[in-house]
Length: 270
Image 1: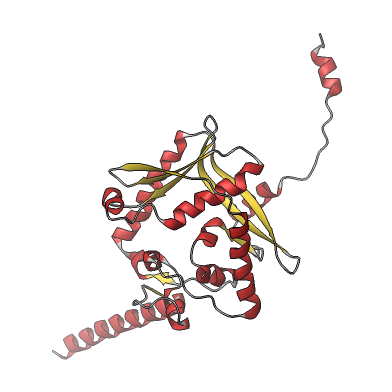
Image 2: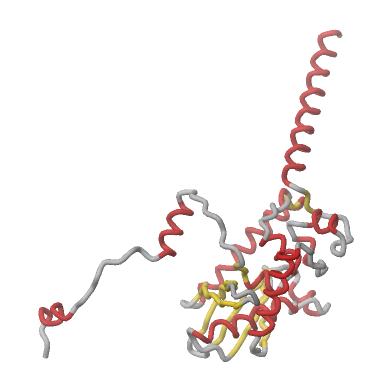
């Protein structure tokens, strides 16, 4: 039997640089900004509107959603945070992965994903979606959404390189109900590569992809630009450029100040 001292003699540890993830975390906590890498996409962007992914990749400034300032929208955001506490049901949660796509010109694009929960006992990926009126949306045929199904199927394509994935589960939650759907795993390797290549081609040619209009457009931060660019949103935009909103706010404050000043002047002449 080896003694503790003998075990210590076998230890071979060499000091190395801190992991990049820790360094980047510290930079973010101290407000240090660094340029986002090019040709890096999230799974959410890939399964969503290509035009939105195109705008993001070009670094176009996001617009201000008009609903952001309402009490209802603020509660919706907080409600989502509350419901996401459900992920604590599993010790394996919020796991990150990167998937690499070799482009036609030889460059490599990155697709980053993060799953909500993983049940290692059954090799199941579980993704949580918070919304409202879950039962009504299911009855009306709005759930499960195609992009949500594609998202978990992307996970079943990306994660097997580091852990087994045999089952996919989508969970929809509101303040009253939890409903789960079983999703069939699919290998979307070619689909992901094609999707990324199409966005990269659009960047190179500067030809804006057609907008993939769905009910989710009302939550998009590029509605005014999408509407102005054509072949996209046709409804009235519910977001406006931030500088326009700031100018509007300044004008409103000036109007209020002038109105207040006129009131004072009128009172002095009475």
